[in-house]
Image 1 (cartoon, one colour):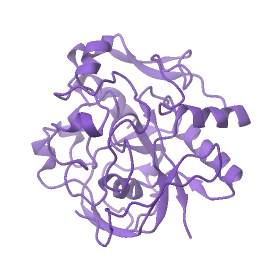
Image 2 (spheres, rainbow, N blue to C red):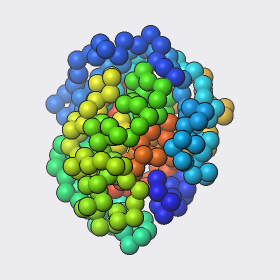
Image 3 (tube, rainbow, N blue to C red):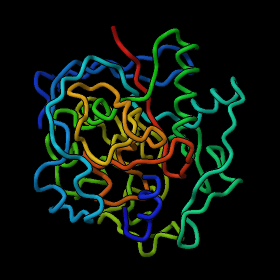
Length: 308
């Protein structure tokens, strides 16, 4: 997150053991309208930021320490969205329920502005139904999972932070699931880069990655290489809501992968970075907090289905 846009985020305030990442299970889907899932095996991993990571990445002081202390977490078997929930999938939910979703924050004129005309249908840039749904609040996302649970007869929800990070790391201990360096960022993630600088009017002074992924805003899901668990866009494209109530760090966090239900539950944790963020935000340990009612033009979600 670049310095001139930090104010909104402040206001919105390891290796997997026993996981065979080479044996990726076949994707599955519970219904025609349901997101495609990948079932992940149970495993253990170290959650949190590496000791030197934030210094190496030149993270600003006010953003350091949020992913500490590190701790080992056991994660139960679960199924998670292969992709971020798409605009087409969210459209089916809105058509079935009439769920309201007008108004979205965009970066315009050097500040974040709430525009009533912006929504998942019109975030201010071109999308089709294979792009990830954006301008989605935590309340929108949880309403979608309740509808999906009723539709499918299975228990859907947002991932906990621990489940999300387990899925994102995919057995790695590096800053990103493709390694520490950003030279391959445009192969694996859609972040702020040369395309963003070239096309987005507001991006002239944004921090960008030194590559060109061909997408100035969101990209269709699955366009970039998957991680070792077969999951796409765990970093970049849209930032993703999790179920956890917000804490400024991991002190007192559960020893399991359970959702954290104490703390400031008017804020929830957001993970993964988005199309408008450069290297600092495209890390497995990166996290911010945001009010549950807020919609932002670079934020969406993916789902988890609980397994027996």
